[in-house]
Length: 310
Image: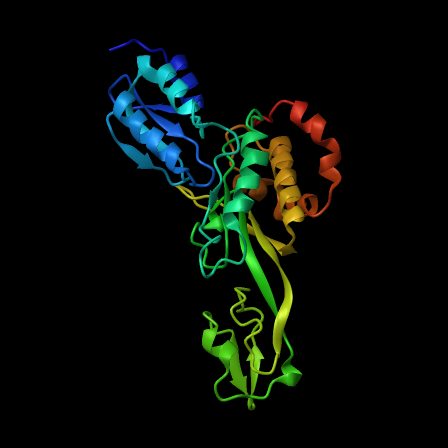
């Protein structure tokens, strides 16, 4: 076995190579753009697994691909081989992690093009902020609808598609077979005195009821995205705190940047975002996210050292 120092193993982990138990072999974590590969890239990864590893490919929870059993001395040749198809290892360390997205682009429930949205986030914040050291990992998840298949609220920054209905109660005819009531997956409609009532607290804004009323009583009030901040899972889980409102794409992108700056300014080294929120208070965090003041201090925040516990 090749003698590797703890520093060498740590440096390799920072590049996306995780040491396999009791060996000098490593798993290479290869980045995808929210789980999407071209057929050529998939073919190259299969070839790389045979040529450099133990012939296996494994998928991670963050939609990256791991090739196991790569000997230490083959790591550089492996990187050159997959690099010819634009593939790189990574996805580890105290930084923005690979973005995950559901298949809302093609799913019948999807309210927007999740794959395209996630790719923009990937390019802007995974690639663009790759060299920005954060207190801990920062995970982003993009969900196409309230079904929450990729569990956005259990990520540091979660995005959920929204289509909010506008119900004209006065125009309701009290149909015995009400299409909106029949399609609502959460039972937000109920009959009261021969007309329908929409429970706004129960409604999850999936948009199923919009534009299907026979008399046009339900139209779209607004469409956009709901945001959750500070979620995590693991030994100690935390449900993400919802940010009040439904936001545009531009507002979401700005809010990701503000969340990263806030985390870098106030988070202790080794502290997850949700723990920081609990420490400094949700009110203070919401105030920063819903204003642009922190953006004016971007260069100062990025140049400053990380906070350490006193």
